[in-house]
Length: 211
Image (cartoon, rainbow, N blue to C red; front, top):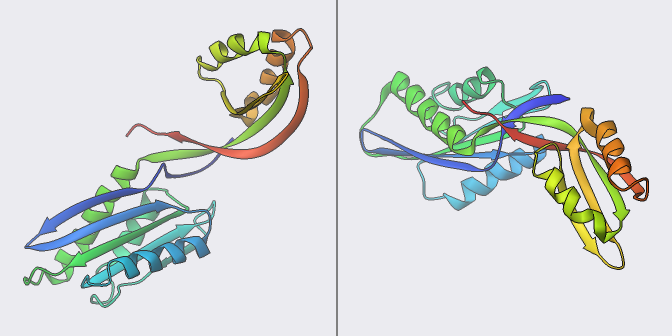
């Protein structure tokens, strides 16, 4: 089940206009609090910058939105970046655009365009993804079934993780929620009913989108 769209990983990009240097940092986050903490980290790391402009969108329905101009003229930086994130349909994301002033004023329109352009490049570097509801199914089974299971995993319907080897194999199988019952049936058929089902956990998985 599709939950929301976000970014796949951390992304960073640089944009230069009229000698001003804009560095966009785009980070996937799990909560509004984590996003605020990340913005504070960037501000501390780039304390020598002229401005560190944050924009945050969180919640499966983009319920939590916040931005700051960090000393730039009101509405010229944080808000345009926030609008970009929102219009792209992204959430659980923190974007901080760091600016080193190059000595030439850009004007209010120029500032808005520059911050938006930098943020867009940062998001592109991070990659947009779908966050889907998934299941982690944990099994214990005989070694004789491992190679067959690995071959089936290569077809892309599920992934094998957290594998532990002892007298038997213990492994987690990650799949989309809608495929969970099919995977259970597959494991039963593959092992002739010998696999021992241990646990099922709800999780999320990221699937990168081509744009």
